[in-house]
Image 1 (cartoon, one colour):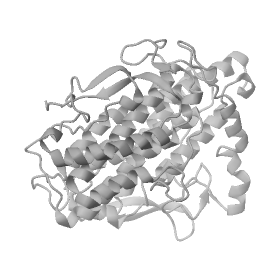
Image 2: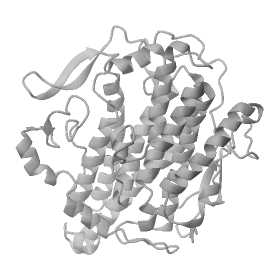
Image 3: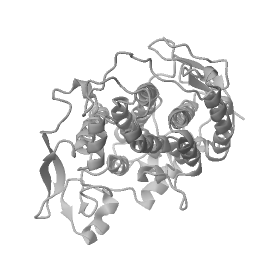
Image 4: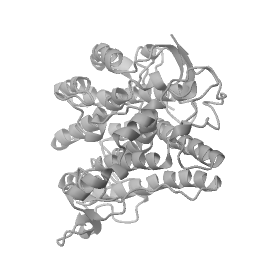
Length: 472
């Protein structure tokens, strides 16, 4: 197990103590990060929060739980343990030793991949900064703040790579990561989904289920990278990302469970007046967050992604488990498209240019598992209603379906019909107003808002009514 230096200002296992130049660079970046955290991070004032802090790598003892003032959270830099025998698993360099330094010919592409990933991390903190004021319980408030500090640590992880391996260009990009802000007109975040609002807790749970799940798959492809420091960084980040998705999965579980309880108890579908979120509104939120997250995978075909794969920069999800030659020069794949007749269909393309579709399909299958969970809750309650994922062409702004409109069932629609019917499929102002009206804070230990069921277990063996957050 690599030894972490937890005594320094920046806990790490990358030998910062021995690299004074890099340590000084990161220590000079830290005040700017803390200024960003104060101005764009959580707005609810707290004394301390029961947080998990990364302190090492390896399967045992990698995190410490304790009450910590968030400004004093020890955002550190951790890479998974190095496999000195690791070889490149795909592309034209397959079989060669992985790279410990950035090859000159791939410098610009690698930097761009790191910047795009890095830009998503602070963006989600900015999107969620006001949610603490309306938390449904101290348990949920703690989970929000855990997500926030770990997104901040993931930013540190990307900034480390920029500082350590990309010289002046990397340092300038690290500053830009703090200059852009979610939703800003002048300097928005790079990817569209990270400029959307997260104004309520249903949105937060959907975001952590659908959008953080996109993050899981993007990190999974970068984990395969031939650039070993990036691979090891992403491997460790995936440990923390799992908690974010748990928050989303179980959060939606609990919303659906509470809605189902009230539907059965009062023998009605109209649970809005009872202080809950109706199933049709939950479905609309699923439709929106899922479709926006699908756009994060880019176009169905991409020569850039083909080049990343061939060069060894970015692999496929679980690359080494694939049963093929890992070079794909002669393979094909069916991708979604609008056919010559104007219908929603599929066409075959070279597998290399269809890698975005390959990754998106892995993601779609994973998303369906959550929908299956939520439907089991409805089934267990004896209700006939079911939630579902909309068609891949629904509400798309990127890729083959960006220029058309489609129903959740995949029916091609004229623009005027879409305008007339979209309120049945996407959250309306009335829906959003109702959901926001429920967002009344419950900051009392052991209590919870009426629109959501309590969790089945607490954090790190603690009970639900533990004092997870001390509010000032």
